[in-house]
Length: 430
Image (tube, rainbow, N blue to C red):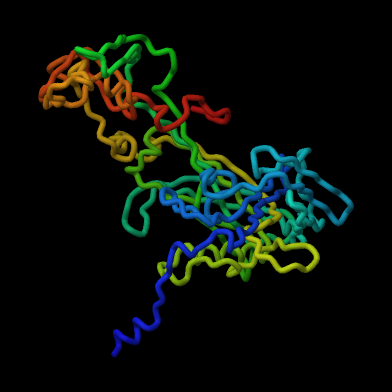
């Protein structure tokens, strides 16, 4: 009886009946407008009705503005965007990349001024935000790192911040960061393979020209930058004072590859309104839920942008005005773990030395294709899988079953550009 009752509550859903035209993709308006004099940005998109099985992308509010995968949302182009202040100021925006609107002049929000963001889409529909205002300013006084253990007993480095209130009523805080780390390819060589005129199907044997030449591009030392993707908030409401002390921004385990050499973090403290604090707090509670029935539903979280004229329409995203303070920190692995072995390279990727035959049987040969050896050098070079390390030496690869003329390594181990950029950031210092 229990099974019959349970089954009676379930209806089959025919996927083919889900017609995209029967649904309306919601407009997504996102902006963090600050009191810094910068080029302010507004992001417009549409929530995706398709399911991308590779990135599982419907609109994802947890990914920082401007860095989400391009296929995760449908960008909204051709709109008119402006920001109006109740003191008579008006700031207009022009579309840069599709769906990304940049202020025509750099500006910063002023304390004591209420702002309204207005958007007119390409089809003439008008939207406006609730009044926005900077609630206060608080200065980061210190960003610092200490050797520590996390709650799981893992040893590593903890990064903390302190701040002091400066103006207004700063009681609600959100923290974001961008971390940059130095990458040094462990099996780099100053020479490289260059393959030209390769025809794997030529008969009786493949034709090709394989050279060992000096590298023209520096690809031993690189840098990679990642932005925080979590919601980190703090409230001092109810405290005797509004200053922030020893708030932990980041914990990095000592075996994490990103601190192997030199590491930098740029921390931004945002003073939020009570409404914005509540909005992001609700998002965070959804993201931490393990219950499939408590996933974010359209309209479940209040958005502060709506259609003009009282028309009812579900709009996603959030626009906020914040007071910000930034501070950057650098440190080296040896600052906290002197004399200790560096963490495993590239999150534990196995960087070994290999060798194989230089060429292979023609792909168009009528005879047997396999010879029991690993893919040839020219095949792997053609696919961008390997990089040159040395002329063959038995002592380097003593267990090779099919020794060839060269010793090589996986591309990731000999070319740092597979993990980052070889252009040193302007802010970088050694």
